Length: 231
Image 1 (cartoon, rainbow, N blue to C red):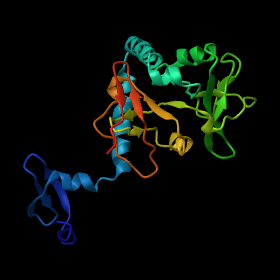
Image 2 (image 1 turned 90 degrees about the vertical axis):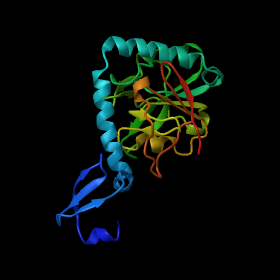
Image 3 (image 1 turned 120 degrees about the horizontal axis):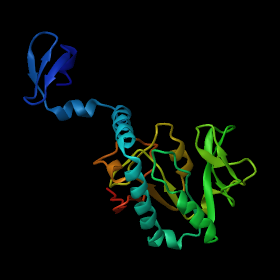
């Protein structure tokens, strides 16, 4: 098939019969998997982002609140959460599970709480310690609340666990972010546990992998704790 492609171009396909018509008027029989393989991971991710964004937007406020409450309870009951002493969390945007109660719980327990802050000089996120949620958070450049400039940076090697947001996740530890690569860079080389946070509908069969993508150790949803299956 690939050798023949120089002789004609496929212009229409009926996947139910595996028959494609060419620009020469002839028909060729191909397997759908051949064309699926020709789609780049970036294109597949883009289509998946659009679908997941639409599904998250359709989630009702009541369902979002109930699911977030269940998710937080599942996180708090996990051995990983209870044993960690220094953690990187995030301040959720409206489309994400609301884990904000976990931030206050961490501080009340006397643990180290770090949140991401965008560094304009390096164009990258860094982990920053927060002690007072009421006074030390402000809207950042991407309209996400983050630590103010006075809060100190925490080296990633001081942290035990990171809760990671995303648009989609799979059971192999795959994560689909928003396309900027910020979390992949932040978590590169991080030796602690990396746990994705998601509504149940954000779990998909497979997230396309690219070399720069950082795999997670687990994903937590309102109903499941999914340990990543390694190849």
